[in-house]
Image 1 (cartoon, rainbow, N blue to C red):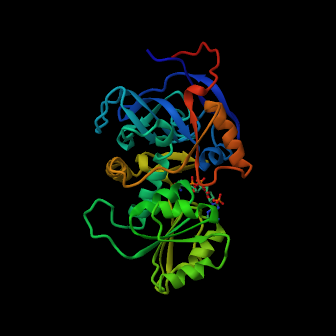
Image 2: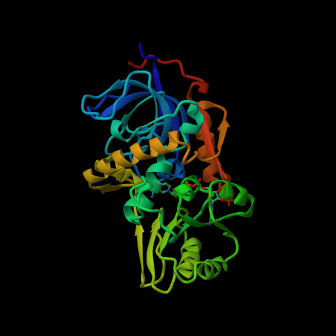
Image 3: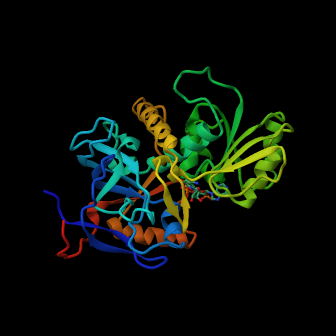
Length: 354
Ligand SMILES: NC(=O)c1ccc[n+]([C@@H]2O[C@H](COP(=O)([O-])OP(=O)(O)OC[C@H]3O[C@@H](n4cnc5c(N)ncnc54)[C@H](OP(=O)(O)O)[C@@H]3O)[C@@H](O)[C@H]2O)c1
């Protein structure tokens, strides 16, 4: 028997409010999950502050337990299994998408089983990051997948922004990785396997990276994606140019460099509405995501990558509202992910239907 659902609903631009909710409808390629932990991403508050409908559920990253499985889900699931994944918070095309609630639905074939010994708190941090780095590094930039099918390459890759939640996962790609972060995170980058680390506050590092890669850098994944990072990356590329993939829509000002921006929401293979614009379905991305999450799950169990550092904050879903406010004010996480235990939420009295 399910308990009363509650979740963070968007009510006006910038406002997420805890409300009693119905249990979401289970679509046939989805899984009904009882969430145990949720983690914050920048998109949670930026989407909330952008154009959009009221009544959408907020938030993306979660870890929890399977309650019910839709008939069309192809990955093996059973009630009670522990999974992590991401939902599309603030999706105007389907208001019940979104992770920051006690019961949610999530696209079944994109979920990853949590390894034995890993907690819900750490597991809640991984799904947006894994999906994003997979899409950027392997699908767009075309690096060979770390599945043992290709010999490891000595070609360098620049992961700009190694201390972001996406960056710490991407630096563990097993390639020759150069990365940037503030000096306080140099130790973390070395632990995660980065070969060379540069302090992003020095505007000359682009030229230094160019020198250290002998004019041969052709591949850059920018997990920050602002004008200053694009400028550093422009200096870092070799004279033959290359490909620059960024998580925000900025471009490298060089004709010999192809700049590409993407949205990880494509991975569900469904159309969606993001900040007022409609994006068409890319069914091939669901197939890709299914394969990549299966590989990432295996490598996680084998200890080939570890999650981003975690800081568990208090207050459950209401704590997440405070966390989003801190991010909005520019005092958000630095080299760690903020996580909330869902059952720490002070639930509301309610008579809403289950
Ligand atoms: N397009 C997509 O599908 C997609 C997917 C995921 C994320 N994103 C976007 O990508 C960005 C990163 O997200 P995230 O969750 O991975 O990051 P995050 O964990 O929130 O990033 C925080 C880290 O960024 C570092 N940082 C800030 N400015 C930097 C700069 N100029 N150069 C190098 N590092 C810098 C900070 O380092 P210090 O504290 O040491 O300064 C901090 O450790 C966000 O804008 C997010 O909205 C887009």
